Length: 94
Image 1: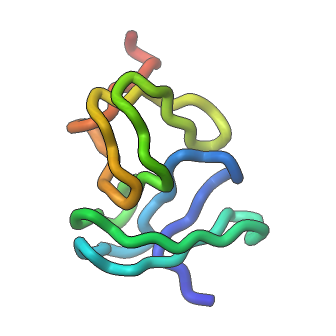
Image 2: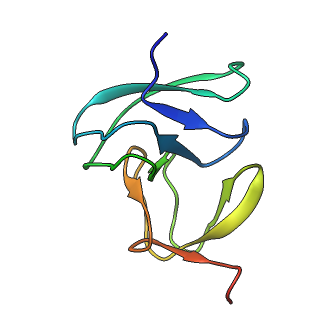
C-alpha cells in the first residue's frame, strides 16, 4: 500500500507527510511498524515533512509524537489539519 503519511508510534496525535498533500485529499498512512493503518481527509494543504492531525485536538491539549508529548495546542485543531507553529507551542521552551 502506498502511504501519504507516517506515524512514528501508535497512539501519536500527528503523522508526518511523506509528500506535499493538498486540501480535501483522501489520504492513507501507517505506523512505522506497519501495524496500524489510517485513512482521513485533509482540511488544508500540508507540505512534505509537516505534521497532520490524526484526531480532533482541543486548545490546551498536549500533543504526542514519537510516543512523547511534543507540545500543546494553542487553538482547536481539526482532524486532517496542518499542525505547525501556528497552532502548537513546544513545551520544551516553556
